[in-house]
Length: 124
Image (cartoon, rainbow, N blue to C red; front, side):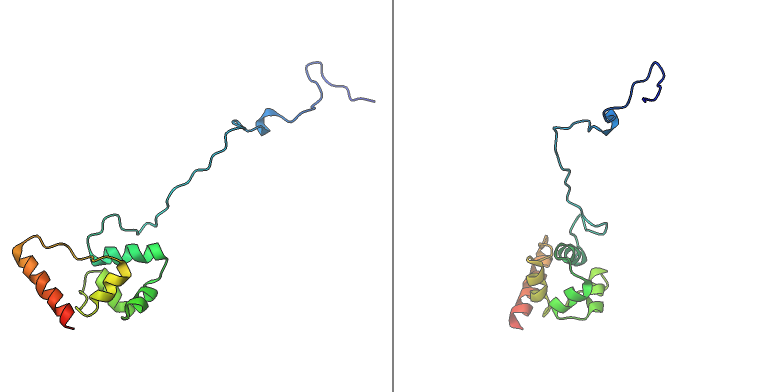
């Protein structure tokens, strides 16, 4: 025997419309390039360059220090601007970064200092 239903109601035979997607024929995927919060937006200092390269390669600071052949605390001092690398370390830094992070000289005295620095690296 069938159940007695109110006059306004009919038996439920199909799924409700709430289960049907709004746009069943449109398929898309949202993609974005995610960057960590500490990713440098502007590369001004050696620390910014090292941080960007480290995050791009997915390395730890200890791995960066090992790649450069220095102590991890030395790399920390460079990134925080406490000290500058000595001339003998710069070729390794440039090789690790793939570019020279030092700024181009803007005055004649800066240009002379850059030349003296280059001579010091070549003589070692």
